[in-house]
Image (cartoon, rainbow, N blue to C red):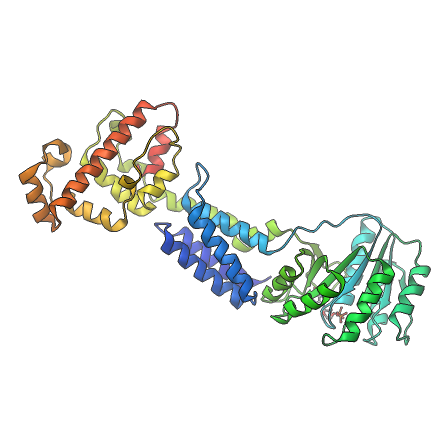
Length: 438
Ligand code: GDP
């Protein structure tokens, strides 16, 4: 079901899950990938742009909730927005109601009418069906055959061309039913007569629901169909048929957006039982393979091995440039320090913001600088001053200012760690170090 759409989405988010750094570039790339997949799947371009703009804005502006990594945060936003794209969750009430079926010929309207009759009948409701499709000659026979299979009464007048008359009489005939489903005519194209007729049937039947049937394989025309029907009779739910085929499905989603409603059911085959209620959350989770994703995120987190940094030594107050070197190595795999710090529960620690704004380019330069230091300097950074700074900058091809910046960075880190030790008990140091890269 929606194979290509699902694979494309999964690939896009997998790429994100595998990224070492979740920065603006990574989000931009994700957004471009999503746009491509959605447009290829026939989702309307305007809708795609709205969706991806929201994903980008939220990803870059919203702070991840405490304890959630940047990667997981962005994936959650993608998930939420895709669920939103599926429309509202539509409530199907098991009570007396009249349902008017709308859709063009071939959409699967008659088949779906039979499936719905079966659905409500199984729920214990008395169901009746009226065939008001006066356009397609075979419609009445098709519907009576379907209804007979499940013992549901079906009213129709083969040969009669006045749909309003048929429905008037049908409603009298089926007066005792709880759920009345009216199958209407569907022409090949949207014509004024068709629209006028369905408006009349809607008024006549005082329909509780007006559901639009859309073929999953329908492309951009789906949007226009939805718009016309919605303007005419205020569509309050969409049924997507032929989801068992290898359809793109995006056109139907545009129809959903156009009506501002949601997907009520999906048709998944030709038999009367092949109708499923639609659950937006479950559907998107399956499409994205959320289980797979979780594993991927965990793997990315494991790339930072706890053995790299001696947490205990650091807890005792020993934090040398060697430790920082290891941390930078680990952090390079994880993302900018600022972001990593943002994930920590450090509400009680005052962090100098710019000190943590270390880009990966800068991290590399810091490493070159440290590569030019002696063991003594790495273990005991206090000895680094004037002439040593000159020597180190020349050896590493950097400027003395950069060496000073590294030292300043180191001191800030050291101070922060001290503050953290002071605040022990307020948060979990071990967990923090794990996130920190240790
Ligand atoms: P109508 O003109 O809208 O009433 O369309 P029909 O109900 O006659 O359906 C048109 C064709 O689509 C028929 O061959 C149906 O068997 C088929 N069809 C309808 N719904 C589904 C579905 O969910 N899956 C599949 N595979 N075929 C379907």
